[in-house]
Image 1 (cartoon, rainbow, N blue to C red):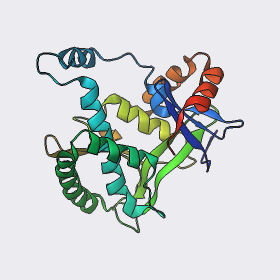
Image 2: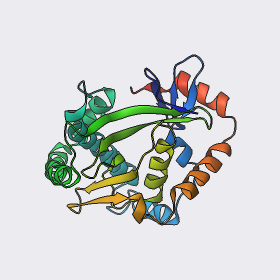
Image 3: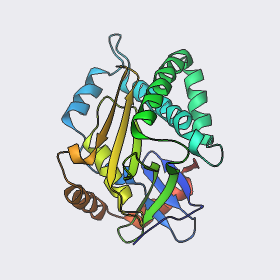
Image 4: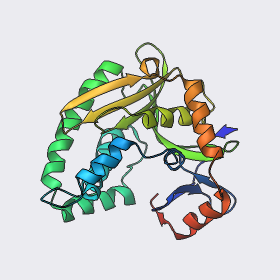
Length: 250
């Protein structure tokens, strides 16, 4: 059973994220479910390389910057389509982190590239105030037991209903594709195209990737996601604890 539920709070700890009404609903986020996948060997090697020793940056610092940058780029790209200003605690914390780490100048340069790329992408895909149906929308699948927040739902130039997610990553990963598949199974609409919009300031490249180009089909990705969700143990107890202890980053 899929649905859109308003007024869910998003609570986060180092162990995961839960969407909850603090009463009856305690659902893991889509990304928390996907984190059940084994860590790729390439990522393990990267963490060993960037260990903070011998003049190398520490991988945690690198990821912290990229997370803060991603949060703020999402805000600046999507806010024009929101009914109300989307600036929240997430954006406040990210801004403070960028300032405290002395990386605001770098971020502003990265944002400038992202804004220019976004203008090109909007023109190419027909994204405008009239075609965008929703942004940053909470969705849930009660039957399987998860929740999440998709970036954008819009109608493209050819009349297709597109579920789109913005990424600032080096490439489009299988987790990105499965994430969109999970979102599409949590809305009561027949989505024509799953789309990852990748804007990578570090390489100054951008890409629009559709599910017709992905190696796994929707059914296969959905099956893997469901298996990951069903393999999670102590779900109710764990998520109640996260809801009680986690930071409200709504």
